[in-house]
Length: 364
Ligand code: MRU
Image (cartoon, rainbow, N blue to C red; front, side):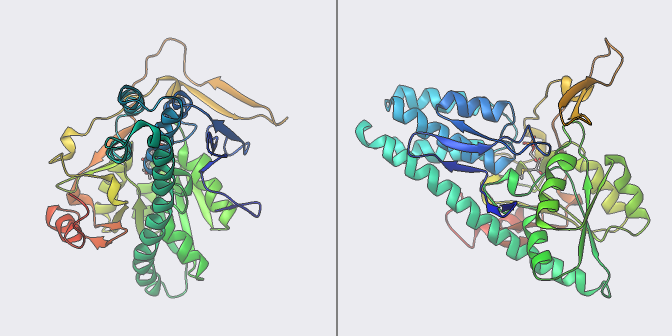
C-alpha cells in the first residue's frame, strides 16, 4: 500500500532485533510508526490496538515470539511468550493460529537455533499473509466484475463494516483487497464505509485507506446502512472476519450481524472475506466464540482533531452512566452469501468449507 508515494506494510523488521509497526491509534490524524523491541512491546501493541485486525494481530504475535527467543530461547520462555500473547485479545483466532505455528516450528530445535528460526518463521507468516490477501482479492474481483457488469456503467456500490483493509493485515486486506483490484482495473466502485462505533475503525481507518488509494467512498453512520439498502443504493456487502466456525458462523466487529440481517431482507449479497488462518474448525458453531468485552471508555469518550491540529479526547455521556461494550458479534451462516478465501469462493456452510479444504490437505 502506498502512503504519499511510499510503499508500506503494516509491520516490518528493523534489523534483526526489532520490528516497526504503524501506530493505528493515531490514524487518520497522524501517520506515525513505532518500534517493538520485546515480547512485552508486542503484547502491549496488540492489547492497546496500536496494531489490530485479525491477520495483523497474528503477524505481530509471531514477531513477539521471535523477539522473546532473542532474549531467552528456553522452553519456559517460549511458553511464557505464548501465554502472554495469547491473553491479549480473545476473539481473533489468527492469534492462536500464529502462536501455534511459531511453537510448532521451534519446539524440536535446539535453543541455539531457535532465535534465527523464529525470525524466519515470523517473516514467512508476514510474506504469506500478503500473498494470501492478494489471492483473496483476485477471487473477490471476479464477483465484483460480475456485479459491475449489471450496472450499466453506473458505480458499483459496496458496503463494508469496520476495517478489513491493508491496515488489518500485512498488506492488501481481506474485504478491501477485491475493491482495490476492481478500482485499479477501472471498474467504477463506490464504498459505503460504516463509521463502526465505538472505536470508529471505519471512519478513521477504512476511509483513510480508501482515500489514500483514490477509491470513491462515503462514511455513513452505522445506523444508515439499512436505509441505503432499502433505497437500492447498495449492490453488495463485503466484510472481514475474526473467526469462522465449522458451520460457517462468522464473528466480526460488533454491528456486522445487523448489516447481514438488513442485507438479507433486501436481497443484497453479503460476502465475508477471510484467509484460512481465520477458520476455527475446532468450534462447531458461533455460540462458542469468545466475545471480547472492551473498555467502557471506548463508548463514553471520543477522540478527534482540534482546529489547531491538536488531538483531544472528550466525554460524550453524562458522568456516572455505565456502558457495555462487546467488541464483536456473530452472524449466522444462513445470512452469508459466500466466503471469499485465498483458495476460492465457497458457500457459507460446512459443506462449502470442506470443499475448499479438500483442495489442499494443508488445513485440518
Ligand atoms: O477490534 P479490531 O479492530 O481488531 O477488529 C478487527 C476488525 O477490524 C474486524 O472485525 C475485521 O472486519 C476483521 S479483521 C480483517
